Image (cartoon, rainbow, N blue to C red):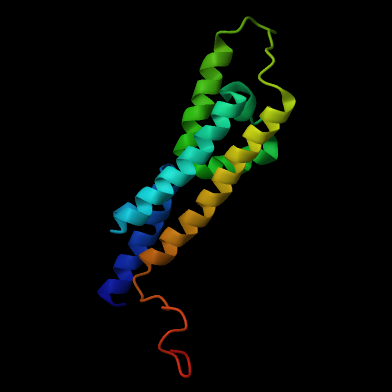
Length: 148
């Protein structure tokens, strides 16, 4: 096995893990700084906008929104921080105490925002893994026969 292939075998999982932890970090690790920063801002802003709309206690809740929580987990570190905040806020409540998080429409929008951010980051993770491969990517149709 060539040394370049061995390097890509190691770089791909590292890039994927870094991107899961912090969206865009895998791209930055691979040297695609501009792309990584754009992805970091886009995914993180989408996730935290959702949390701001619905509140941390009603948005990131694996008991109430189980399937959406699986999508949210794809943002890795963002979901970890939001879930820790959720647990910290809920720990201040008296036993059996419940709070109305936000209006139901805004709560649903918030869950969707954070879930979509997670699914978007799943695509970003896959992109980082493919870019870590090291092989030149197809440049599109330019340069092919009959296409200028």
